[in-house]
Image (cartoon, rainbow, N blue to C red; front, side):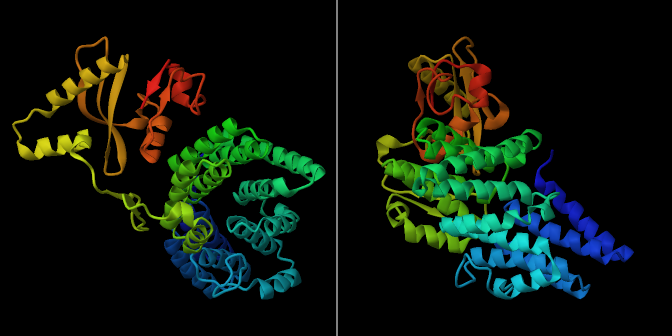
Length: 439
């Protein structure tokens, strides 16, 4: 019922305890568990690979061959993503060679290693759009699934198995399509249970598969909602690689529908997230497949820096008439400390609420990469609360809508928020039942 990240420190403690007590097998298993869990919670790949290299050497020194093999498989998968292999879908490189490893695993009857090999090939083949091979490797992995039953690998297997099969849906026969939907539905029943007990780890995964299912069934509105929920869920819980994937799949969805502006917005977000993760091979793959969506605009450029979580946006050629409130606020503070900023904000809020015919209004500004409520007021109250710096997830506003507008730079206008638009399932909308929303 807790985020998988919270298990990382106990694994390191277990590793140290095993070394101190002489239980070297336990120490090696804990070191491996730390490495694979770090990978799947979205740790930046350069750091993850460095740690895997360190712990692989430590496991080698205490002569625990099984745990060493498992960790090397993960390390090679990371190296593939980082662009350090000839073919990103084959586990052949500096750390591991599947052509040599598979026969050795069969000889030692190491089903855990076999599962990890086939799972990572499922994962990599899917990520690099080799869907037929992804499904083939998924089928091979399934026969070894029992060997990893008590681990988070099981939900991840069902996630990528479902996504790979749904990717094959359009080109499949009617009978095969029916079988795909049945298999995905069974997997989703399991994912829904996991999401019930640990939504921070599994709910966005469930929503992403639901989005893809709705897509192949032509349920376009439902697909849009599920993509948004998957994106926000992954972002809110710091699953960077799954946030990237959700953006990518949403972009493909909009591109297929001919909505290129939406597709470009989402694909740029995917490109940025993969870059932050450190997946250089995937970044290059997107650039090769979708150059029309990833061409940098002369007006807006975004810098990818894997050392920070905040994007830098630069905008040029802005006319004087479009001078925004954030600029006014900064200028006011710089010009003179005599200006009473809270009175200025209060006056502006009253004017905006009155002119919009709103019951209440909020001023949301971005500060150091975070959206904060800086002012709020209602039509009933004369007083306006200003300079609050309250996080948008405080419950006063719809986090989903605010994040959507900030990300896409597009306005949201809803005449009946609880009945129309893509945010009807948003917790804020359901709890407060607002009539109309303008953001």
